[in-house]
Amino acid sequence: MLVVSRGKVSETDIEAVKAAGYGEQEIAEIVANVALNIFTNYFNETAGTVVDFPAIEFPLASRAASA
Image (cartoon, rainbow, N blue to C red):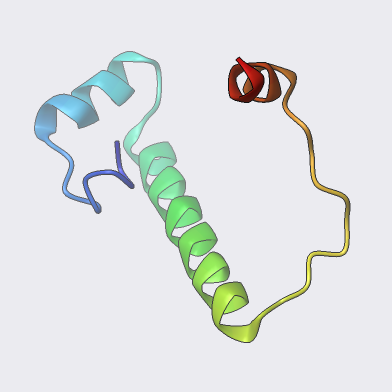
């Protein structure tokens, strides 16, 4: 929800995460890690970083594509 809503999460969303057992510090860490991953992706897209490991095949996705 954090990425889809571009960081504009509702109080209900926050309460749902807390109800799942996460505290405010853990929620802050989740947000920080999401932001870091987004910025890393932007940087790599801009820099044209070559991925140096093989692509992962997801069995369910490949079945759905062939159906």
